[in-house]
Image 1: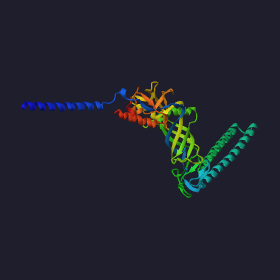
Image 2: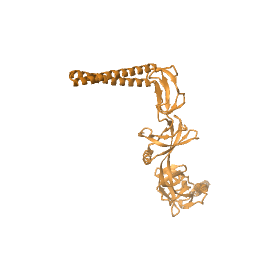
Image 3: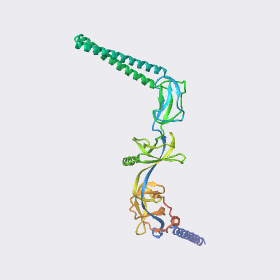
Length: 398
């Protein structure tokens, strides 16, 4: 009896183990993914590269800076007699701005001029005596020494006259400091003195800022330096400036490229000059600048979303004659908007735009009908999900 019960127990355990093995084996077979040969082609959307001229546009933020600003100071200590200008007024070069108390200066000028007149009279008298002495010497009435003495007196009187004439000119120059005129055309700033104010050399009277023309200073990456220099050698480089509110745009030209690159920031400082008769640009104003550094002639242009970059480089997928995906290495020359100019293509490639996230080099593809790029991407994602695979990021391909 005991032997019979033990045999029945052993048989039951063996049967349970067989059932468990069959269930596990069946589940593993069911969950086994389909092999590469069993996966269908990936649906993709394609495009062709276009040839076109591509302007290389450089953009930067800049600040309006005047070409010159002058801080006016008196050259002598005196009192303001009259202010001929108003704050914010536009003045021309040479226009009278301030008059100082010039009574003492005018007296000194009169004194110097009177000294010159006296010297002229003295010189004339000595010259007459010298001429008379020469006549008497010819008649043997005076000695040669008397003639020589008078000749020396003439030379001395002439030298004294020249010295006093120079002193008179110097006095006139000093007197001119009492009239302060605009050294250039520009706009007057705040006026810091009034009639009756005592001014010294250190006293700032006002400032004049040149507004037309005016410059905008900004920086560009040092990688653009060679292109900028070449463009400047070829001719004028047009620059557009837009004010902060975006309502006004003015046109100018590149006028200055700094002689050094900032080694810390890796940028080059440049300036552009603009005609500013309507004063659209104001010193210190913040503007956006845009210039065309060069034009890529007959460049290959493709959508940016077709480009893949990873550790192996930059490339695109193209469809070969066997309807398979192949890798074409490219170089991104310039990106603009949703497109990019590249090198490495001959124009005959069928560039894959959508569906490339599920591709591998040599993988079979099926080209979607025109206008169904979104559907192609969705179909490709569904196929990948059904096959039990995870879509790879562009940067993990290769």
